[in-house]
Length: 358
Image (tube, rainbow, N blue to C red; front, side, top):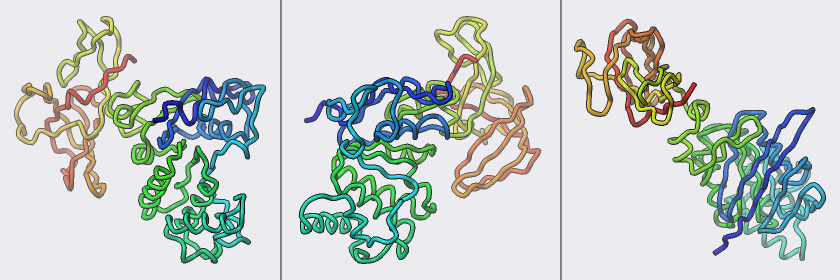
């Protein structure tokens, strides 16, 4: 069993105009593993990818493949010898070449060997019927699969993918992503995927590296990154958030919803208590009653419905809270559209809240 990472980058840095675009980024990926660089536009994701591919040089740091140095600031293996495949949003197929010639472009060896590899890959992406066709005859999803087959043809040890599915419509995207992931796993390829879409990262990645301002601010399995965020911005990147403001006294933060534990924070610290809309619960059994405590959800607080919208699989209800006039959002499964002005009691799932010093 391989213990050496297929891809390892150490302390990569890249500056443009005196600004650190990539700032001390390190990560490692095993063979067959999918790691996602997730973050907003301009955070340094694509620049990191280009340095690994060899089309851009780092200012400092090292890149290793299977434990062997391929690039530092002195030694540099050329991009074409790194055994790294590339996939981008722009499929960049050659319009004047057939599908077979696109997939086989750059393959070396005997003509029969190359043809066998092309046919193998087109069969695996279910496009053999188009082997003699041309890119303009294919749909966007089919072109994406041809681009995948072309990237895999030379059997790269690593695949770098920069927003490869963003050009596809929503109907096709999930299916194409799943097919792509399955094929990459079969090839035992280490994959570094760049995206700004949290749903895509959660769906595809074995590990997520959350990037912000040129740095990796959190890294781990999707479940852990989602459920154990390092700060308010990390929570907000994956979903809408609600925020309660409070001050710590005796390791507790007092709110209209009761006290929240704030261990390790000194008295007088101002904190944000952050939680997602699905964890603000409407207490249908307490209509008209007072703010009584519950075992798991603390104290109920009263809010007035501002608006309600149906989103397809759930409803989003916004409340103006009595205690401070702030707005909180709740998501409710299926259809729930109370009239504006309706008063309701709300509770917060205590074990789904994050307390961060402000």
